[in-house]
Image 1 (cartoon, rainbow, N blue to C red):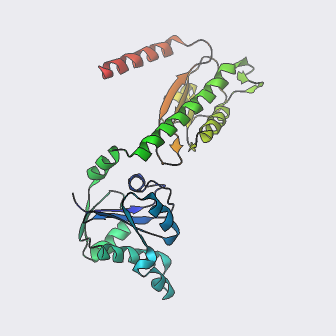
Image 2 (cartoon, rainbow, N blue to C red):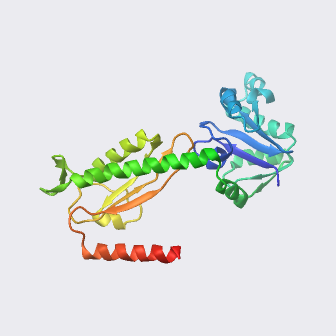
Image 3 (tube, rainbow, N blue to C red):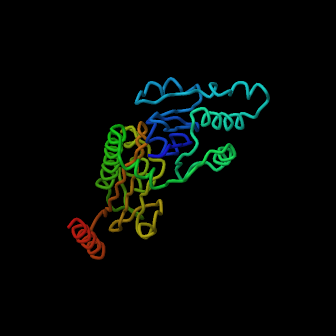
Length: 268
C-alpha cells in the first residue's frame, strides 16, 4: 500500500471526511505513512480530532513553525503552505498517492521540495466504497430524513383538490415552492439538510434536473427528488417519487409500467 496524502476540509471533500468523520470547515492535511495516520491541522481543531481516537496522531500548525512564519511577516495563506511542506518532510514522506482533487498549488510546492505525487483516483474511490460505522449510521439517518420529507410532500398532495387555476390545499394554491418548504422542514427535523431539491410538475418533470416551480395542476406528474445530507456524517441518501393528484393519464400509467418492468429485469 502506498503512502497516502490528502488535503482539504471535511465539508466539501468527501475523501477527507471518510478519514476524519467530523466537521472541520478549514483545509488541513492527512497522511498515512510508515503504518501511522497523521493529521496536520489548525490548533483550533486539535482537541476535537484527538477525541476521535481511531489511531490519529494530531499535529498543530505551530509544531512546524507557523507562528514564527506569521510573526516574520509571511502571508497567512503562504505560511500554511510552508507548514504543509515542512510537515510532509518531517513525517518522512518522499512519495505519496493523492486523490484527483488534490490542490495544484500545494502539489507544486511539494514537488519543488522533491516529493513525488501520483494521482490515484481509483484507490481513493475504492477506499470510500468501504463504509465506516459512522458513515453507515449517517446514511441511515439521511434516508430516514428523505422519507420524512417525502411523507410531508404526500400529506400536502393528499389534501389538495381542484380549485381556480390549479390545485388548492388548505385554502391556498398548491405550488412547488410550498411543497419544498414542507419537505425542508421535515428533513431538518431529521438532522439533515436539503438546500437543493426537486419538486417539478408537468413539462418541468421531463427536463433533467429542473428544480421545479409554480402552481400544480390536477392530473399532471409531480416528480419529487430528494438527496438530503446528514449533518453529523456528511453522508447522503437519494429518493425519487412521481405523484399525480386526480386521475392519472394513460400515458403516465404506461411509463410507470415500463419502469417497473425495467426494474424487475434488472433485478433478475
